[in-house]
Length: 421
Image (cartoon, helix red, strand yellow):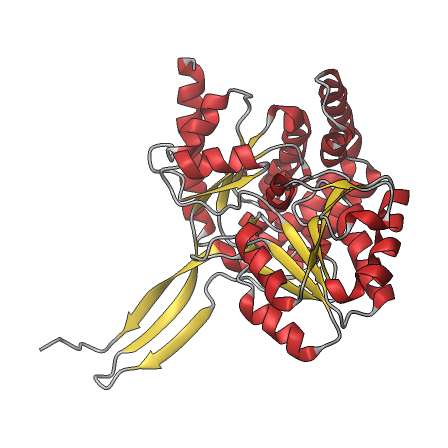
């Protein structure tokens, strides 16, 4: 990596750290003004952003990227409006910084308060979704954090155009434009430097992308990481499922958008309803051009099905492919998910409250759903105003990482001259 880029990255880190310190002292009103200016800027610069995005799409097609990849990369007027709506929703949230999380008095007269604080500087390494730049910028700004974005090369033009609009908004709001920065390079070593923390400038790394990206980040990072390797999501269709509801949920969970981490990859079906339910599900999926990979007990219900291999149960397809397996009941469904799940999102379709309760208590994933599509595994759908990522670990943040999860806390101890014996 050339010396100029190394120097530039360290400068980005120092500027982010400085901007983070300033954000600690700004008012909620000042942060909220940014969102008004940012929404206006994205609307005013929509042609520029879409032109940059078209260049990214053309390059991706030349590089023979598949249609699921192109869908994640693509922007249009409707998706830009979605970005604006997300920013507006984030703006409406209560400022998480400075909230007193708990407060108590000690017998010696000391008052101790636990108060929410920003994490500091967040490094976000992401791949092909340029809208992530806006979501992350808004969430980090609202939670008092500076952010350094590192886009994959396929969406770099689009992300840089969005960040340019956000930085213009920051300046209009009287905030440092370095609150939101993007690495202006495709060089992979730039990501490596971020994983090393840019000489102490970065406090947390968040990877958003495929398995290989997240695995590399979690393996190489020298700062804390919020991340998940895969979204191998399951639906268990119980014998007490309402059939029409189960069909609708399964179809949506697989086919609404097949390339997102919340798409279902394996559907487990109670053996007692195989003959009534599987033919309808298989026909619906096949008619939507979804490849169905079935176990021995379910393959005979539709001629278009193909046999599933053992590898299918541990595969995140991110494509119109689904695996289907028969299970004897709730216990076998739980056992399968515990063996092959990745801690992301699981759903049960059942009208039996006891079965629902057993499922939610037994499944230790970040998100567990009842009678709902796994595609709701999204910060925006949770009312969090988008997300900076889905965390499947158990420390600090879990599930959609929104403004509240982008905070830490400190203790403020107030006294009146107390000394310790």
